[in-house]
Image (tube, rainbow, N blue to C red; front, side, top):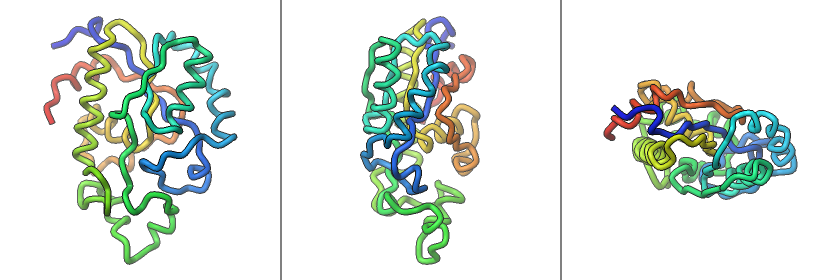
Length: 202
């Protein structure tokens, strides 16, 4: 088993707000920038980030995450890296639609996916929930091993973070919805969970 000191210390943080977040629309892989409220939100989060002793920041390649990470990195004066493995899941033909409208649409399979994302594939999506799980697990493994002893802030998205959280807690992915965290506050992955993650084969 990998020793804790041989691994990076990893904090996960969600990106700040976009216009579609304010409108409660599914964003997925749609590449939206932060809105003004999101920019101010990131700046307001800096005092929390400062306390963590961050050595470098790794961000999803999507604009909303990168812009959030850039605000943090420039303030902390630490390196910023881009990693496409941290991108959000693709909501396919549901991208841009309002959550409540999708839930109320009897002609859509969204409610079925919403209740259990393993039950169906996303229409016109580019990967299954299981493929996304494999992607994020392998990405976090690589980060943990590549930067031993460093403290890393990973800026990502709420759905892909929920998939990772289910994996860390050994929960079935049908519990994905109840493990979504809307907060932008950084949360550390406990070293014990990180060590167990390294042993997972998907």
